[in-house]
Length: 302
Image (cartoon, rainbow, N blue to C red; front, side):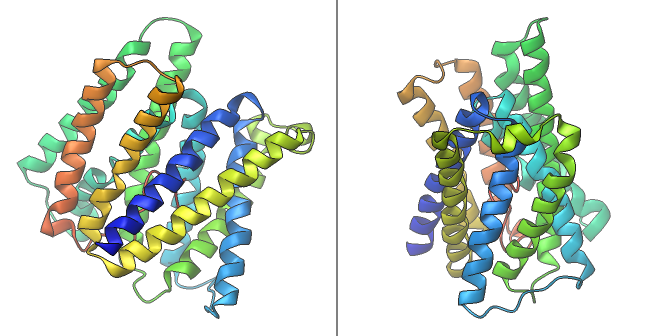
């Protein structure tokens, strides 16, 4: 049971990261939140890797760069989605990645998806549409929410690329992979910062409480990553990954308790339509080899 308990702790920590990222929207630019996530994770994971004597990698193998670049774009999409949508909606949509793994395995791994995979795709897409149904309209806010849903969907697709890439990096220590990703993502965020409309004032003119919230977000993400790595190292990847879906439930319950959202049956049904096929896909033996360490919601969680 220990791997599953570790994954529950990981899901709880990532829930804290997700809710803090959403709560920081009114305090600072979303790109600053993403940059804090990557840079703090880089400091924490690099320090842990060096303390444990893990050999880090940089230029080789090339697949490592594919994983890090895809993860960087996925992370940006995730944190943009956190700006537009409740964290529970973002987490639900980004957790569709096992379904995209099944589809991408067709051109990459020559594994043709069966009718049940296409049914899972339709169910998840319908679930994403139901999540957005309460927000449908013609105002600017609705456009922003739809943009957030699209960004979360793109993030889940890129997370599938990350997962397949991880399958090709079996000989690289998982902590070295995370350090490489954190470094590349930090540079990626710094390069994208001017294009996002964020200024130096947005990054350095914040209040002390905001900096503390940013630090808490980065720390919770690192704790979640540590428990996630321990869980996948000790348990069956496909089954442990199903437990990771509990983050969707944690986020939804937390937001109901603190009053950040109202109960809406369409959103709840939409989450079930996404989580159900996703859990089923993860439990399929044909996908058990697809990831040593699944990315979770959008590399925002890794």
